[in-house]
Image (cartoon, rainbow, N blue to C red; front, side):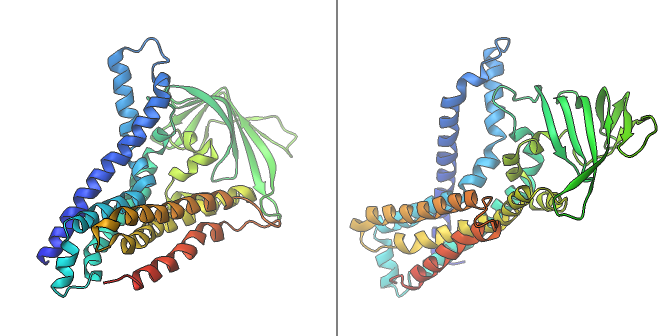
Length: 365
């Protein structure tokens, strides 16, 4: 590795760390300012416990914040790297030595690819195991609250309903499980029976719900309900908090989303799942596209134009970021009675990738 490459990589990593702590720290401060009163709702908690809850609540969310800001952090680190070189006139010295400015981009892209790999690891392997903790509210940091369960479908096509879910004891109070089978029509299910009980306690060893006073009734049977002692499902105490709200599915890995899509749910739910699955592919690409857009603008030889270059760079990357956000909103909507989530999720790539390639090709070296 050449001295120039080491110098650029060192500057980039320094800028990356600064951007990481500044952007994520800023988000934590803003959220804490808005939600500080939520942490202190329980009057029994002392000051030290409230501080511990705040530390735990935001500490466990750092991987989630990194996923949201990964592309912007890379752009800020790139601006830091080349901005420093422009201010000190180092780009002119590099050009005078006969080295093309495009050569300076190579180490930045190599490190950016490695950081994109870290982004993928974070998205697929770090966030999903923490999903049940990430969905907790500020006044339930330790996951001790109870809440209702409203018709969550599992791998068998059954629907789980319960008056309350006691997350502390992993128990469903007065659960009802609607047993269903799929009809010939896509997304249409027929109820074949139901299971009810006074309580269902999750058996972590056997991965099943143990039923207390459980009975099973069949819709077509004229016989009396029969005792039923356990129910095996892919929806356990860790999955219930995530699956109870549609927006929480963004915390799942691609493999988990794929398993859910194979359950053949309602059309709108299927569209949302497909959009989330495609986002797991496009998000790393968009992160690199944002970098490709910003680099040619930031490599300017005149220090007087540096501020303008930084402004244009962040304007372009912000446009890409906003377009991606809006496209994801449209991904779950039907237009002309047809839903095409894949098109909307990939649309920012189709728009900004050609722009990035043209900018790189026309960069003055």
